[in-house]
Image (cartoon, rainbow, N blue to C red; front, side, top):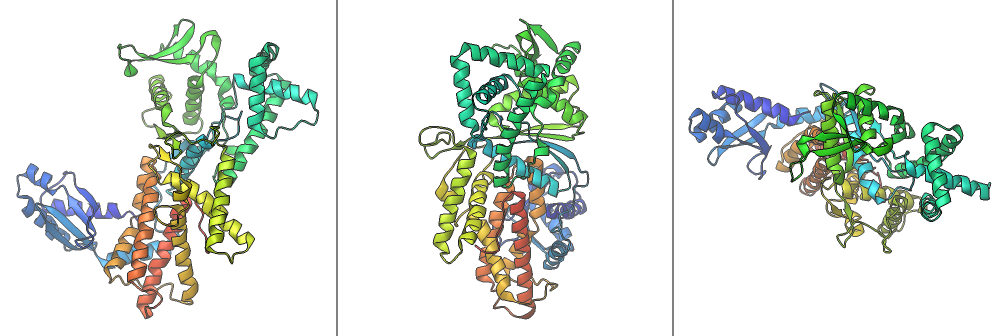
Amino acid sequence: MKLNQILSAEIEQAFTAAGISGSPIVLQPAKNPDFGDFQINGVMGAAKQSKQNPRELAQKVADALSGSRVVASAEVAGPGFINLRLSPEFLAQELNHALTSGNLGIQAASAPQTVVIDYSSPNLAKEMHVGHLRSSIIGDSIARILSALGHKVIRQNHVGDWGTQFGMLVAYMVEQQKENSDFKLSDLEQFYRAAKVRFDEDPAFADTAREYVVKLQGGDEAVLALWKQFVAISLSHAQQVYDTLGLLLAPEDVAGESQYNNDLQNVVDDLCAQGLAVDDKGAKVVFLEEFKNKEGEAAAFIVQKQGGGFLYASTDLACLRYRIGCLKADRLLYVVDTRQDLHFKQLFATSRKAGYLPENVSAEFIGFGTMMGKDGKPFKTRSGDTVKLVDLLAEAVQRATVLVRSKNPELSDTEAEHIGRTVGIGAVKYADLSKNRGSDYVFDWDNMLSFEGNTAPYLQYAYTRIQSIFRKAGEWNVQAALLLQDGLEKQLAVELLKFEDILNSAAESAYPHYLAAYLYQLATLFSRFYEACPILKAEGALRDSRLQLANLTAQTLKTGLDLLGIDTLAVM
């Protein structure tokens, strides 16, 4: 149920009745719930345009709203603000729909899109590290939210599985297998470092590696077989991380750089044929006037290197063509580190000029900042090494399990480990998703595992607390009518009905922290309601009504956390 849409329609009718149309009206939550649920701004601007007294116009609008089925009262405040209180009957009706609809009353998008979302995308030469965390969980959450709203979401894990380094790695794999027929690749990081040392220190090995690159690009079956073996092992490492994180990414979502290899020359030739790419000292370059430097020179977007080699730009152009031409995308989302902002701006600009990116398709760079340590520097181990993602997640589970045992020493080992895993992984994900993705944030174990404040454990416990209410409640009328009499009951009702609006905002902006902030507000408001409005001690219809509010709150928390990729627990 789109509360803002319903209210906006009612307000627009009221302004029309007052003789005003087409003026920008701002509807926002009331700053003080004692004065109302929402506040209408924009009256003064409309009054100025129509040469009316602001308060008189506001009163006309308020009078027109007074007979609405949605608004219980509309009061003029200050120079021309209007405070609205929503009708308890309207709130009860909409809450009942949310409870009985099976999907919390969320309407599917009226014009569903095919959204292709590019996220995670690690390089397969190494194990995943903390630098891959944000893309993976931010992208997964956006994908979940879009799917929940009825859009067709196509996940694309654009892994780095091609290029010069793979010649080096395959050469080293062959060398190791010759020395040890039982050789198995178990530690990607160690393997990569050893291969790099051989490449840097042994000219003969480096020449062999380059030969393998040529064979790989030429389709040599033996070399391709080794490459496939290396890629398969690398992807299995990545999938273990995805499974631990609870991501919806699956092997069939992998669409690596190698997938577009056969189309790279076609793209360059087409850009040249259109006159967009020109020869510049042996390289093929698209000069973009939109991105001039201080000297007024157009930016050079290189699509083919001297000697015929290809770059990220070449692959990304071929990839974009595929996603629009074959996957029929209406919207492209790239969840990538903010440092790649300029590259993607130039990619989109080139694609528009070339006709690869039609005007009716949106392409969006979903940038994110860096995960920092408490020292304000990018998160590293004490020795200064990059932290493996699998190690970070193992530590999260271990820390959370210790915390759970300290709070509930009577739990069995199995129970403590299950709760610890759910809390630990949830804490890591929520600490990220609750922040504006465009900002850097400080990784702090103590804060993220706290059961107080805006954290996953706080929200998970809020859900668990409601489940304990129902275990104590016994039988109750699950079809009871809602009686919204107390002020906090009404506040909670209004907050619950904002859920779909929040999801739409998060989907349109690709900012999951909007949803996280809403869930924290909802949990905090429920806690106030719980303290002020006894549930189990209430009697009859009032008790059942408050259980209905608790039930819908629990469902909303569970659904919202699931859309962030965070599990809930019946017992903590």
